[in-house]
Image 1 (cartoon, rainbow, N blue to C red):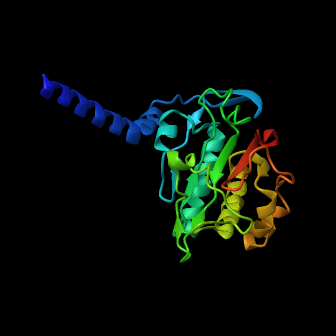
Image 2 (cartoon, rainbow, N blue to C red):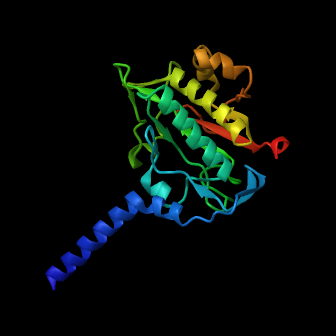
Length: 240
């Protein structure tokens, strides 16, 4: 009897592990080919035919495999294409840089606790790219112990213990997002990022370019956005 119980527990353990690692990919395989439809606004909306982002790629990963399995990485199909294309461009131009994306929304949109927005498939949280004290790019550490990365606090210089925000990589990524948005018939409506950290971003080569063409938050958000930058997209109907 004891051996049977151990065998069942072992099977369940490995089944859960496999689901955790490959469940999101399986859900993507069975997604509908129907185009997504965003309804309402990021703060009061819904999403039809939402699409999940990949759990990982050549230079990026999700903030949490569990979060991805639960579908908390779902977006409008154009946003998915934009995000993946921008990461691909970054991988080609900056192969040593790695990135982590955060939460986006539910497959059907709607209320997305604890976020106040992320309801219509057009919002994405990108965790800040970071470097160690030797300047090496590494994924932002994310675990239940730091709220999957959302609990990390950076000072006004962009440092958190041994981590330093890579402002140049962040600016280059936003630049590529903007370029990919144009090709996927989207626009970046605004970016929410801690105002006290924005001067470091705008001093970079790409920061000077994006500052003139993208609206950034000028006031602190209800929750400090220092460990991630929240990007709101809109569908560019002019290109329909």
